[in-house]
Amino acid sequence: MDTASDASVAGRCLCGGVRFTATPQGGMHACHCEACRKISGGVSLSVDCGDSVVVEGEVASYASSEWAERQFCPTCGSGLFWRLRAGGMTMVSVQAFDDPGAFVFEDEVCIDRKPGNYAMAGDRPRITEAELMAMYAPSDA
Image 1 (cartoon, rainbow, N blue to C red):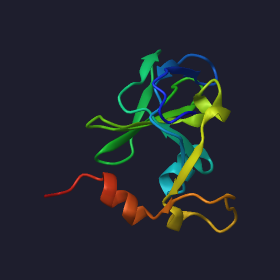
Image 2: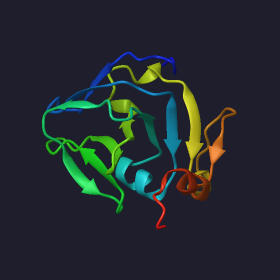
Image 3: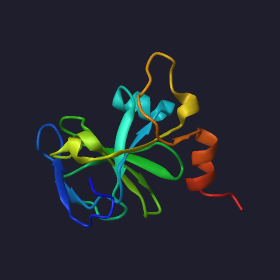
Image 4: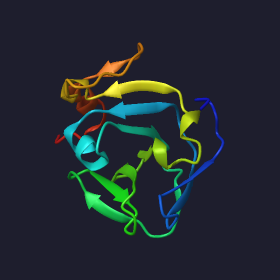
């Protein structure tokens, strides 16, 4: 997907009970943290859509930390969104978009948490969990 695009794109869960539109703010990110791997069954591939996500249907939420939550379809269980509770960032599962192949592979995060039994080919930025937390986690100050 063109990172300068302001076009809204559509997606849905597996059963179609939750549909959404969102405006991606860049390319695809791969997260290797334990929480993402546990909830997705593998590496999590997502794209930041800021606060642009418009949802039709009911989503269930799981508070995965004090500052973020994961949202999914309560009927089929499809993982759809990871969002900051304070707003400003909603990571949408790439596979939930109608055209998941439209996104450029931008970076990998929590690379130090990646299990040793797989690797993703290609050169791209790879960020450790500590580097990611320094960029996005709320400070206790």
